[in-house]
Image 1 (tube, rainbow, N blue to C red):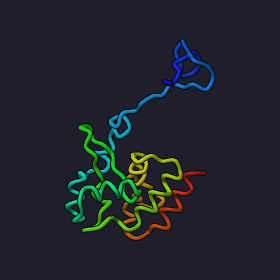
Image 2 (spheres, helix red, strand yellow):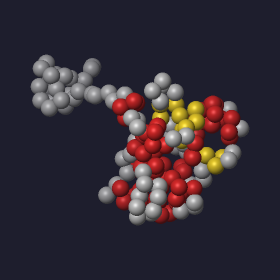
Image 3 (spheres, helix red, strand yellow):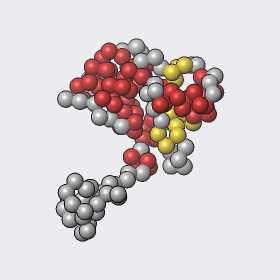
Length: 147
């Protein structure tokens, strides 16, 4: 049965009863607006596969396993921030950090935005601190976001 669209907040007349809600779909371009400018350099999944010397299906598996995250660009192509890779491998501290951000309620676009947003108390961006090997500090900050 489809969700209701009845009376009440977020509903239109014709509700099926309490507990039914209207779902609002947010497109990837609404959710990732300006994200591509913030990050700058992105890689498509085939580019990631080539850089890591893997098959594209393995890159999909890394995303499914939470070792990488990707967002869709305006054309619907899934892209990964280039700084998630270091030479021919995934940034070692990334998977655990992404797990902490997900546990704090962040979706993929929000996690990327947080990693690329300047923090005067660091100073700098969390992604740069991760690349410098300061994962404990960044994960502590990410855990605090959940409270």
